[in-house]
Image 1 (cartoon, rainbow, N blue to C red):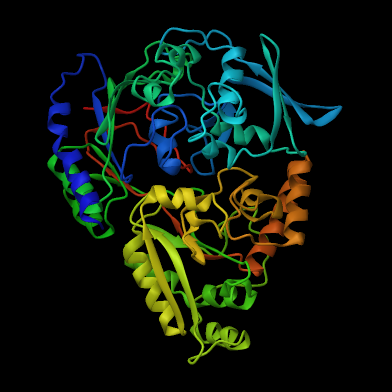
Image 2 (image 1 turned 90 degrees about the horizontal axis):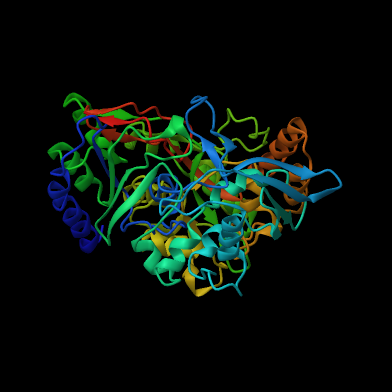
Length: 536
């Protein structure tokens, strides 16, 4: 951990007593203070950076998406989608590339202006129209990297938006959870500048941002006029702050400076429980892999080397080191997922098999595999990347692989994973160790299809399988759920057998909180519904 990151976290924690001194309204639900793993505040202008942790706290709290997540029902299966600022959608029966969406009526932005179809077009142009005055060249790639299939959009009438895709894409509504709505009127009021908008933002969400202290914290208050009356927050105030150092977060929780921390240190969990703190873990759609560079010049171009590295690691031992806050991963999906399929490769800790595969590929004691992997110091879903990678490095050395690390900050990695593996932003590495999600059925297309080679989408390693690509395209072209599942399972089996990535663990989403925090129910999602929480 870099000293400046530790000091940033400590400084943020030190600033909190002044925040906690603010009086709560007598009948209110109190103030919830959350310490994130991020090294800096996620952007507050409606396209959060810092990965899904940014969306978790500075996306879905102050903003709504065109399609929202259902974070209340069915906590024992991955979260589904529900109506957001679009109330209904359907593909055009005559043209599967054309989608028709109904715009929600009666919604106000926090600044009092109306949400309407014109606001939808304004926000879509921010992302997709580089000739528009509101085009956001810095932030738009965050959305476009996932929602890359948009070909066009138009306002059909005051109630209707029509969007077209580049290819048949039955999972399109799932991806519109990434498109958050901000106030065009507020953007105009602050001088048509996104940096200024971030200081005084305006969305439609259940919380309103009232104070932004760059690098330190963001304050939000309850939106009493929120359009979804069942989700008007019980809290009076929500405060989020970056605190990348694990021990700093735990100390802040113990001292009462914060009420909730993301990712407590594994060795602190027993004592936190003994001290009366609540510690929750819950499976969610998360995988912590090495995304492997499969292009010429990388040892991982050879499938035998990719399979070897998957047999080289002790996943069970790593999970034990983490005190049970993760479980082994042998694919993008966990084996209990209907999308897992029936791969022939059953990865387990087998150093002898790893050595044999390496020898078959022409490697050995006098010619070891050499590679450098980009790893981060912290970040959304990254758990404890430094000690985890040190553990893995020992596994690699035991089978004759010389794996070194390019240690970067989380923001640098997020730019790298959206870049071509040969681009300067990728630092010349042969792999990227980044936490990734499978929150929607189109996930594999982004990660593994030939059409999704970075920088277009998230296939950073340029894994190239025509068989997998054909299966993934067929899955998203059909509207039959059973056929989708069948095709996705076949594609996943192909990806696993090809060892497109080094599959390591699935995080179990640990967080710790004061016993004063009431009303939190963990769900299988990267995101949380904070509207039902109170702090006594």
